[in-house]
Structure formats: C-alpha cells, structure tokens
Length: 551
Image 1: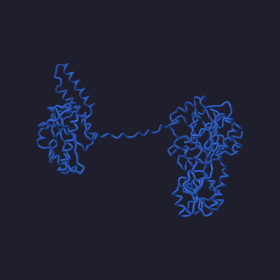
Image 2: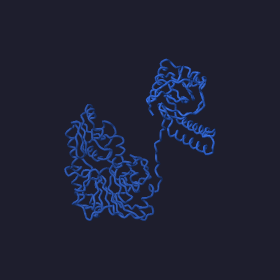
Image 3: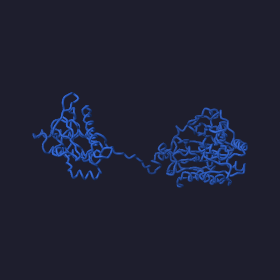
Image 4: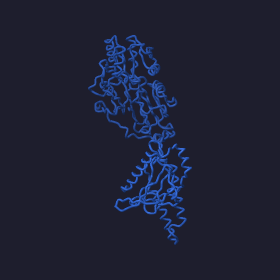
C-alpha cells in the first residue's frame, strides 16, 4: 500500500485504514490505482478530496456515495478548514501528475509549512512552468514517487516507448496483438495504436465504461474479432493463453511496463513504457525544487541518499511542528464527531462435552464448601452437622446445577459407566442413548441411581482389592433386578483409588412403556448379538480405564 499520514496534521493521502489513522480528518486521493485505494470501499463515510475525473472513476469503480466525494479543480488553490470552528485553515492545490487519467499531486500550505505530495507521477519539464510550481516556492517536505529510483535503470520517454511498440507490431504484420495493461492507465497508448494501424481496439465492457469517461476518440469496441489489437489485464497473458490464441490465429503479446516480467513464451515481448519517472527525471525534478526534506512514497525503496546534494538547508521535519489547539481538539474528536463504527464480534460456539464425561471438580468444591459452612454453623448451634435443612439446601443446589447442565448439554453417543465403587455407593447412568454405527439399539436408558446387588473384585493401583460390578443389560432395557434397586439418595462417586470424582443425584426411572415411546421416537431397533457384544466391549474398555488409575 502506497499512502501516508502527514505527521502532526489531520491530513491523510491515499491512506484508508481508519484504525491506523484515528487523528486524520481530511482524506485525499491522488489516483485510482489499486495500491492507492487499499481500504477504500462503498461503505466509506468521510470526506474525500480528489480531481474531478478521479471522482467519476471512484463512483464508477467503488460505488462510493457522492455525498463524501469533493472534487477540486486542478491548478487552483482551495482553502480547507483544519478544525471544526474555522479558526485554522490550509491551502491545497492540485497539479497534474502525468501518470494515469485523473492522477494529481497535492501542494499543501499551512501551519506545518509547505508540503508537496507527488503520489505516482511522470516528470516532464512543463510541470515546473505551470502554477503553482513556477514561482519557486520553498518545499519544506517532498513526498517523492521513488518507484524507478534506480541509477542502473534507464528508461525511454513514453513517446520513445510508443515508437518501439509500433515497430514491433510492424514486424509481425500477420499477427494479432494482445496488450497487457492494468485496469487503469495507458489508454492514450491504445488510441495511438488504433490511429496508427487503422484498427479498432477490443476491450472488456468494464474498460469501455472507463474509457467513455475519458472522452477519447471512438476507436474502442467490445466485439471480439472486430479489431487486430486487443487490450487485456496483465494476468490474462499466460503460457496456456498464448498456446490457445496461436492455435486460433498467430498472436504476439506485449507488456508495456518498466517492471520485471518473466517471459513464458517466445511471442511475448516487454517494452519499457512507464508511467513513473525515471531516475534521471527524478534527479532533474529534485534539483529544480530543492526541498528541505525528502520522504519516499514507496517505503520499501529508500532513496534519500541519492538526492542529498540537491536539498536546501536547514532541513525540516514535522516532528517539532506546533499543532494549534483548535486543530488538536479536532484531531481528538472520535471519528471526526461521527458515530463510532460497529464492532463485530465472533459468536462464541458453546462447548459440548464428548466421550466419558465427569462433572467439574470446581462445582464439587463449591458444593463441599457450602456443606462445610452449613456443618460448622450447625456445630456452633449444638445441632447435628447435617440436619434436614442442610440436606434440603444441598439437594436444591445440586439439582439446580444439574438442570442448568441439561439445558446446555446435548445428548452424546458415549456411555458414562463408573466401573469401580466403594462399599455402600451406587451406580448412576445419566440420560444417554448410545447407538452403534450400524444404527442398532445398543442401550435405551434414562436412569437414576442403582445400588450394587452383588460385587466383584477389581484391583486398585496399590494392589488392594476393590469392589466392581458390571451393568446387566438385555434387549428390553434394564432388567427388573436393576429397576428394583433404584434409590433417591444422592452420593459422592469415587474412583478405584478412592479419589472423589462426581456428585450425582436422584432421577426417576423410565418405565417400559416410556422406553418404547422413546424407541419409536428415535426409530431404534432391538439389541442384536453384534450390538450386545459391542456394548460389552465398551463396558470392558471403561472398566480397564478405571483400573489403570487414571485421575
């Protein structure tokens, strides 16, 4: 991006990233090339100052509302306010930049001194013979187009480059000609070729709309095959395109540019036709102006050292410029007094647990703290540590947390089965409906607490025996044996190592008729031998998981 914010001023030139220029209030557009309009779009809502032709192209290309576009006549000084009370003003004069249609340079004069911003330009001696540069004003700061600031790069004038292109076309009298261009610029070259070879220039409908704004000769058409010369975007000239075009008719392609271009085909030619000043032209321009300070427009190509001999003294910088108080207040206003832009925040996607799910330890700790506080208060009163009121409080808090979790947690496909338990504890199967990959019913359950009718021994990590029980399943859901052991007492589940894992509470058992309704609702099929074995293997995996002592 080629643009600048003038330090200690509310001025921005070719700079449209609002977040990086909060103090800018006056925005200037030198021309409509893409690298000078980054961030500028149809939603722009601040004043833009530019040339009349650029204003038309801006409306055509980017659909910027005309309310914000303020075209300024070239060669005439224009007074603009630098605050919102009219106390501080500046003068800006637009100068033809000889770069592309509508391109201009800006001469700013105000409390900051005299600043010339060239943007992209191609120097010709006539520039210094026209106002306002003909009065030899002292330029404090020169923002210089340094695109071709290379002493080893010699460029012909545009007239000489046009002659080279004409000679190249004459050497291929039987060939069609494809000219690779940017979306804006070199329209006069196309006109000269049309008049020289008496042919129409075939262009795209979008380019024709732009050409109609320039009021050039009527030598352009969108009809394919109507002319020998065709103008396309540079990106369209590729190796495969050249093969295709030459299969239809012999074709050559020409890049009129001073930039380096990789050649992919023997019929592609590069002619150094440039809309930027050559190094020799830059030296001549700077030598005549004798500015105090030079700032390059292209930041990646620092070239001040080449022009030190032409600078005036003393050198001036904008870092020590005194900003008038009214301008300072104007620059501090939020977005120039307009409504702040809407902040779009990415919606946070809720997290749904998958796999073997445990309740968080934080919740258990919070409940334990409540119980401990209740117990302490009971002891001070001489009553039992856990009386009926405390139990009811505990049950209410836990049930409230479980209800909140049920509202935000979607059903998952895995089964939560604690495999190892201490004496007197119970097994809880939360509301889960695990379904095998083949769609068969593996288990249909919406269960509450189950006591352990019989216990088997498993081994802790320390080698001591620990009771364990497998869950008894059949095709009808839970057996009557399981259903008969439902209790309504909450308990604290522990793993094989005796560590506290999860608080659970009572839930109601799903009757057989309700289970059938759920089976019909979810289109479940009875348990088969295959799915039964899959459920048994899953149970073994879970049991082995706890045997390993994973905390």
